[in-house]
Image (cartoon, rainbow, N blue to C red; front, side, top):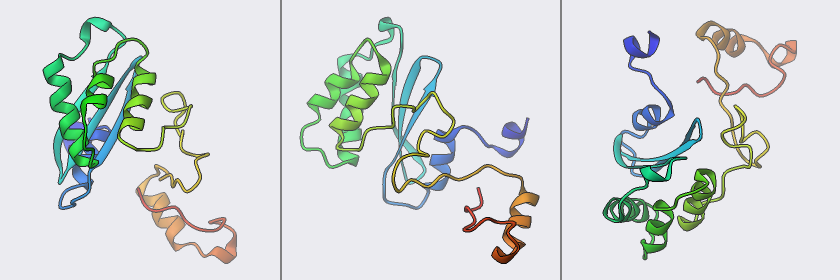
Length: 159
């Protein structure tokens, strides 16, 4: 109900919202069941989306894969999008294809626990996690001083 009334949604929708007015690309990887999807946003608009399905019958056509690979490659300054197009047409293990796509784009691989734990980036050096919390809890944490021991150090950003 909250999502319907406030227009909130999953991570891909939020990526579209927070990338408005920005020039950099936002690549969102999502696991839903046994399937994985990639969503590329730029300036709040969905530029390309691709899914790897557990069912090989859902494989993208050569034209669809080439179009998506071109869009993804342009965002990450790839000169040859053909290896990525091959990855996008892959069948078999969707998680493996997601890793292959990240490698083809020159991006670091996702942690092994991606899609299986709620905080897969917790152990990645330099990663910052934003904790989901209520508005009132965020205010309380923001107003508490570090000396009273309530905050335990640096406060996470508001989510």
